[in-house]
Image 1: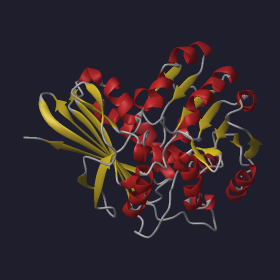
Image 2: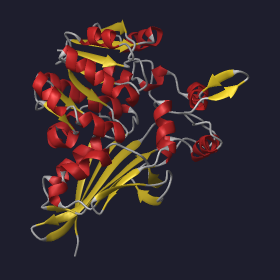
Image 3: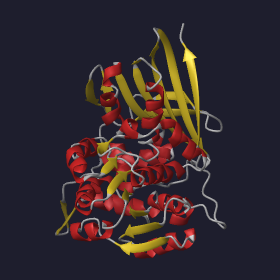
Length: 389
């Protein structure tokens, strides 16, 4: 089994590479990345003979196709901007596909490729990171046991860093988009755009997280879950997170810059040069991302204390009685699920366990088998059911 990890030298892609390299079902893992120097650091840290490196530019279609030829699955660990063109390369190369999310709008565009994937005889699972990914499968678990669903409420709780700890723990462009783009929610049969950083509520997570302030954020779960389970009467679906795992003070600083136009995509003229403000912001923030080795578990390296619990609450009815399913997936290796979840999907795709076409996770991933594989990496899911009087 050969898996190509595009962006395998990145912060989340490297975790997927390490997980795949340790999987006995996988024979070869290719780090396909433009940054060969960082890819070498990843490969050396992992120290597996299964891992090889190939330089690839995600904007070069011919190079993408060449890199994917002979691969069973493409695991896309790049920024979501490249999702559609990477899927086109998979269609040409005949490789299965999975990614870590499309930030709602791109995911909806990707789903339209389902017929073409099926005709090619290949499959795709979209949004298989920690979130999206885990919440979709949590919802599937509850939906399989409910007659009707009132709401799907997703809370992504991350242990906050100290106020003076300025860091960005995943793709900076995605963080900026989540911080500035209108969050989409599903209410009363329609999708509604809201303001970023709104609808705050305090939510209790498992220890050691405790009570955290949660707010709306643009995310891919909302794009598919209300549609997948429409026949159960879903009336509400939202995704909330606590400052994207960053210090509140850091988020406020970035918001000020965004308010002054530094997240803008339209070029402005500076001393005779046309520059895009957002490009400058992304470049400057890139200096505040932890080193790649912080994301990998190695004999001489302990990943940061990044505790994370992903919770999905699903109120509904069973046999005429009102109940609430709560599923919480907890890890003390915070970023781990983001790389492990798509690695599991990549293997399942290569094994032929996913139907042909393009699918959201909740439609094709068996919850109990998936959660069992997460347990093997110290990522545990607990289920509670509350009956309402």
